[in-house]
Length: 125
Image (spheres, rainbow, N blue to C red):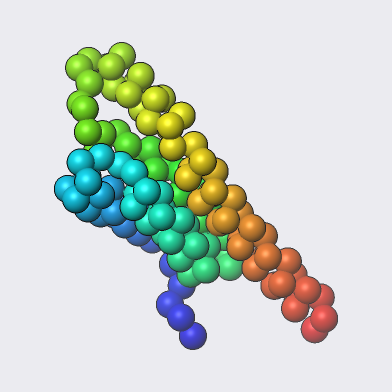
C-alpha cells in the first residue's frame, strides 16, 4: 500500500513541492511559466491520490494555498510595499488562473471519486 499523507503532511508537501517547481522554473526560464503550471498539475494529482481517506478535503485546499505562496515568494519582479505585493499577487493569480483552476479541479475530481468509491465499498459490506 502506498504511504498516505495526513492533512498537515499534504499542506507541507504541497508548499515545498510547489516552491521547488517555482524556483526551478524561475532559475531556468527567468519567470513562472509552463513548467510551473505543469508541475502544479502533477503536484495536485499526487496530493489527491496520496492523501488519507479521512483527510480528503486537504488535497484541494492545500494546492491553491501553495500556489499563492509560490507566487508571493517567487515573482520575478519584486514589488515595493504591501500594496505592491498585493497587486503583484493578484496579477500573478489572474495571469495563471487556468493552471490554478485546472490543478484544483483535478484534485477535486480525484478526491470526489475516491470519496464515492469508499462510500460504495462501505455500503456494500
